[in-house]
Image (cartoon, rainbow, N blue to C red):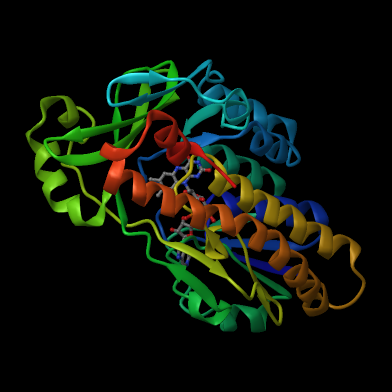
Length: 341
Ligand SMILES: Cc1cc2nc3c(=O)[nH]c(=O)nc-3n(C[C@H](O)[C@H](O)[C@H](O)COP(=O)(O)OP(=O)(O)OC[C@H]3O[C@@H](n4cnc5c(N)ncnc54)[C@H](O)[C@@H]3O)c2cc1C
């Protein structure tokens, strides 16, 4: 069995590890366009369910994540117009619990898959998965939300009208906080969470129309400058669901198949869930690889469609919050910030 995985993000590495477990005598190659030492610099939150799924690789993986990340969060706060709001305990319960730097998470996963016998190739951007598909029995596309192969998987793309800038502060923090505030007359949502014992991630979320002005505001703020050392840069986070997940012996997973609304913890969790489902179909379904992938395609479509709807609802809520928070009650704001359907 010869397997190629495109992308050494967390989902590609998880897939490589699971596939090596499934085909111990097989050869699993991961192709990554970035260099081994290129850092992304952003922070991640992990659900306990994600930790549980990662533990399937090996208990040491979970231990290493817990060692390089934070202690579980003990406080989650929501601040609206300067007032502390109480989170619904049920919502709080489903929120992520561990913070970690994305680059540290990758280090842990890379070390594990290497030990398991997977071969990692850095600075190896793949331009055409069809070429790999001819030389391999299975090709797993896990190259993230900006996948250049998106069109072949029939993507439904959504323009959120929202933009994000993310930064990091070299100081610890002991809670996960979300606040709604204004800078002059620009409304923004700020997310803060610890990602190690001594670092905190911050993400600022604004309407696209305000991104230019907000960049200037942040540049002039000494407090914000501590987070955005090189200047705040607002970017769009793509939102996309691929209708088709498999074609012949090629399958797409992770953000390349479902790029969700920025909501802490959901991206990784659903990437791992998809990979687990793929593993199950490869392991249990009879037939050729292409037939197994087709079975995965059918199962995953239903599962992801179900997950997609709350994303669309959350966008509408965030837009209405940033456009009209002045006329909203605290309860309506709370709902718009964290609610799910
Ligand atoms: C600011 C921000 C904060 C986020 N915070 C969280 C969070 O707290 N928790 C959470 O769970 N999710 C979070 N997400 C979402 C999360 O980043 C993704 O859901 C998750 O990383 C998806 O993993 P992936 O492996 O599918 O893709 P990625 O992590 O994007 O990895 C894809 C990899 O493929 C490589 N690649 C791309 N094209 C090619 C090519 N042609 N050839 C070879 N390699 C290629 C890329 O270099 C990259 O290494 C956040 C996203 C953003 C933008």
